[in-house]
Image (tube, rainbow, N blue to C red; front, side, top):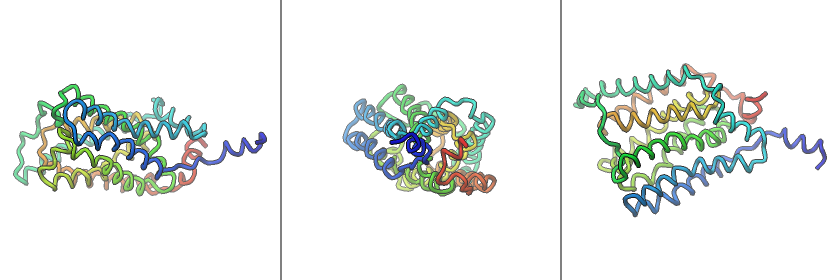
Length: 285
């Protein structure tokens, strides 16, 4: 290859491969989670944690073997570019989610729920793996997951469409990715099996939440760190605030309303198409 041909190849827009990414992320997660459905205790917990690492591992491999220097640079900046984080926006998002919790509990009073939900639970919903194991699981789910979802996944969808439809598709796929967890004893998702409504609500709730976290991501110039902080806060609030399963169904309605408000007030962000087909180039032009 001549010098000119090599230069042209290097400047050619990177072609994301979202279908292959999701196929591999699902496969390398579920290959550990499905066996865990037949096990209990520490062995099941280890398999579950390994599965949680899969999207991040697949994402990193996709970037490293891409042969695209701009894509590698992009991942590095998203991970360690502290100057990219809009801390005010992250704080607003955190306060906003706290407001969602408060509004949800107050609304739940109309459905016979109690004000005692304004308290912290003693333990995590993960049973059988101890406090340390539960804490590690929640932390890994919050932090390591985002390396996968924001390191490659969301961009791989967003490169082909506006961020509104990207959020819709990603939210649905992200929710479905959790499916085996409802069959693993001791997980939060397995605890929802007492009522099909709780299970359905869990999978639906991931879609509007996907819009909110996409907003956090884009508002901080596609910073993974910003999403890690927000995801960690959301997970701990969901785990430690003593909301009942019934109240969490109400919470989904509130989250949908907030997500709709965010989309309406950020139309250019969600419906703009300037980035389509040249996501990396648009960022570094």
